[in-house]
Image (tube, rainbow, N blue to C red; front, side):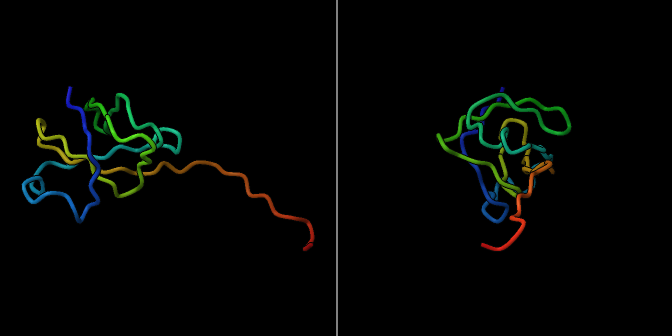
Amino acid sequence: MTVVERIYRERDVPEWARGYTRDTITLGWEDRTHAHGRRRTDAGLEFGTSLPRGTVLHAGDCLVLDGERLVVSVIERAEPVFVVEPRSAP
């Protein structure tokens, strides 16, 4: 299994990887905060991540899987949130 250790922004993907096939991975907030673990692209390819502690993946981040000649782009999954507003101004 390929293990990714580096994140690129789209504009910073190395020239040698720009012709690779593209795929996506859609992750919620909690999954985007896990620096280490097993992942699966939206098309079903498994790979691992071993990123620096504290890494948070963001929309538009790219993971390069050299062995598979693949660039995986991160998509942030839409999630419900609570909006708390005061009833009156203080």
